[in-house]
Length: 270
Image (cartoon, rainbow, N blue to C red; front, side, top):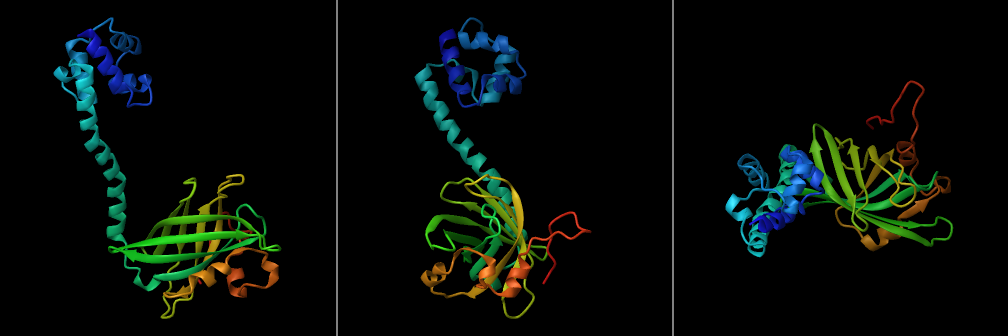
């Protein structure tokens, strides 16, 4: 029986980052718990109950043959995993329930902002807002080309969710290739009958070089619901603002200037 307890306890502990964390959560002495794991001591009735409650097993299960116990634990852990998965989804559902409709904003956009990793250069990427099952989602592709040679410098793909809360549009996106970054943007909505440009602030940083967190102004130029995606992608890349390729009003919207009386980077409603 001590050997079964020793092996089964070791299995349960393997699902946790460390023995120290298990002891801390159980409020048990580490030295005493190590004796249980070594099979040189048996838990008291009180400690056995505490251990069983913590790991979600019964005392009879904890003392059964290790192979059978492992099968039981693997079955019990499946709903636990689903429960852990549902926790963040529950928070997301609360936000979706408060979010207003975004049908007006469905379509394609050019996204403009000053590059985090190429000082003085502007990134123009192709993004879209689309609707699936009453939820609104975001996609964005950055094809980074050298502005002088046209040679590819890499590609970033992003996916995310879009929310409309308290008269502001929020976009939360993650980089899908390396899964190494999350960007959040807050935009002013458009109250005009014809959608043209959305402006706001985004936080993030370089995906490859430096990884220094930053914030910048961002502008979305609406292209329409139906476009030639291939042709639009050819117009994306990394550009020098002095080349005169962009609308002057867009260049003005994304200038990252902090005035003498300001202490944070913010943007006025257009």
